Image 1 (cartoon, rainbow, N blue to C red):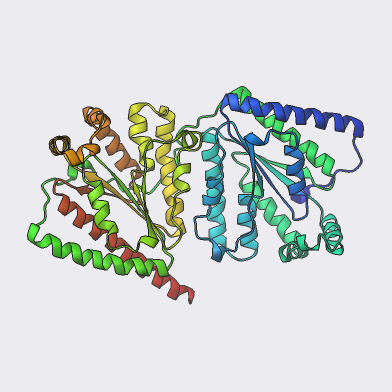
Image 2: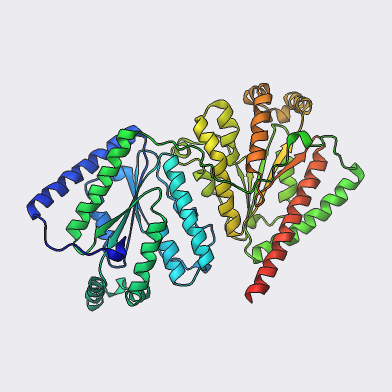
Length: 500
């Protein structure tokens, strides 16, 4: 890697190099149309040393491209203590639609290496984030993304020369930050760290190390890497990965067959218990806000099982400034054109806030599986991708609670007919509800597979028996308050151990 890299000596034939560079620029412009036709999203991540010319390289790469079909994103350095979302969220947020390019001025490399060397994250957290980077890159590849990673390399002497030139000019001295000076001072330490990171994350997509000391050479090498990779992807067609085989700490429960649908609550005790739990939840909401504990609550269940009423009782005591209820419908064209988890990553709560999803990412392994909206590879691979997604959340400190609101077919039929015969409730029943009911056995199997393959130690499923809706509401509130109480207590213990 770069530890042993020497900057190239001598100059190539300038005229030939210039002509070839222009040819590849023309090829890159043509590839914009080709990737639209092939429905390929392309990500070009430009990393490198401070003052190596990342911005200039991106400008030269895009100068003749159609701006309607690419975007450029820059990720500034945000101290770890100011981060309010999971590590990978900002990178998922900017994922391009199929048929478009994304150019990233720095990415996950800088976010991991820089924070580790600045001692903002521990060695353990560094290693976890390296694993997260590999997971992200593999998921992108498996979902059809083309990822090209470039690293602009310059020597310590060249970096110092550029920093000096910038500082001597009144109009450019502002561009030299304290981080730039620190990196120059600790050049050898950064060199080793960059090398180790690239070695650890070259599994799915290789790193292309560019000669940053000669900008024309760097442009030529970047164009060679990009056009070559995109050409191969167009010829091969959209890649569709298979399940990874990665092992997760699965619980093996719950199962629908173990649910007690006769469970009920004494109507005379319901109001008192509801009030007690809601008051407790209100207190806990203040505590998780103060301690910056994020919470994600997922609702899935049979049509007419009572999700809406359950959610209303859950949110009633909450401060409306500290939670969002997110109803999930069929994906829009823009959502379909991205990684299937993209629309959920973009809706995650800030630390200290609660996000309640009415339907979730599990649509991939239920309705999309049964209705044929994705391939068999897609939904089989999704179990692992979902487990990885939820692990990212819980590693960040999120409380993840997943509820399957459960009823039997007879109860559903009774509620469907009541909706149809009650004018003010007729909007709740649609032809699609009846069609889904006809496929009850297929959905029942899909739900069972989902429960068995995605109920993990860190994000377990809870089956909420909802033939008696009042019982279901109390049970849900009890699980939520117990989980938040544990999270608050664990947060206190961690704080005491760390000396906070």
